[in-house]
Length: 109
Image 1 (spheres, rainbow, N blue to C red):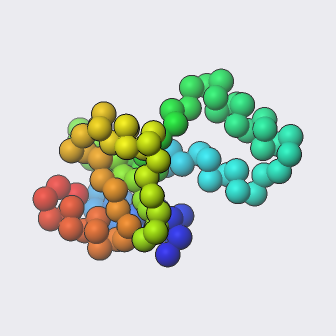
Image 2 (cartoon, one colour):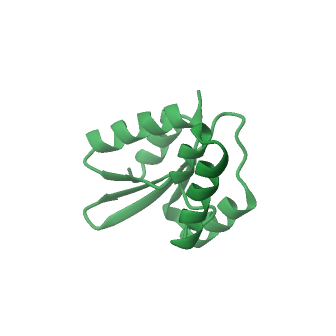
């Protein structure tokens, strides 16, 4: 399963469980961009302070926030993502399937 397909499943699951879900994966738009348009998009996000390594999703419910990074089964975290995981700590989940999110859910989600 591709990461973006997993993100869609996670968003649906979290919303069904009462969470507000915000997607931070702004770079997904780059896949369809070429040339000057791609360059302008990247520069725009650099100017407004895009944080490299930020998680794909932020989920909020009842004053609680969790951060979710979706990876395919073969996906690897970049060093910036690992640094962000350290900063956000126990509220940061790296998942490769909806089942792995549900395992976390037994404790918190």
